[in-house]
Amino acid sequence: MLLTTARTRIEILNPEESHLLLNFYQQNREHLAPWEPIRASEYYTKEYWHNAVAGNQTHFEQSIGFHFVALTAERDQVIGVANFTNVARGAFQACFLGYCISKPFEGQGYMTEILEATIDYLFTEQKLHRIMANYIPDNKGSERVLEKLGFEREGYAKRYLKIAGQWQDHILMSKINPLVE
Image (cartoon, rainbow, N blue to C red; front, side, top):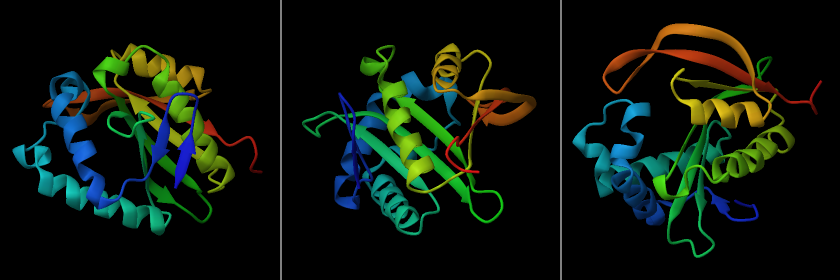
């Protein structure tokens, strides 16, 4: 699976390539800490990422999760990730979106570029109807990205997720597929 944008290669990694995600999360540990759950030390190990990437590949093969990794053209550095999880089929045809960007690529439009390509894939190829994304009110970067992509605010959830060791409120957003009736 390969999607391309003007500046990225977006792929579902193989377990043999899990070192790319390990490096990404090790290098961005402090950068991502305010927006993620507190991670156990195992999260930053080769074994953890090998198993996670193997699971991600299985999710892709079963069309129940899409864990996209955006790479530089040289495939030597992860720019960001876009995870479409908890894919529900049947009458719902929806999923949740989570994403993050490497600090050196932040604020340059990469996340919008990555999400445009991956959302297009989910809407056109997977025929999903709804993609839901939530963000902490203080995360203005996520707010801007989601608004640029046409996500609409649907609600406010108090103490929704335990992020950085605290139960955090979240703004609930979604984007509806204009191509599916």
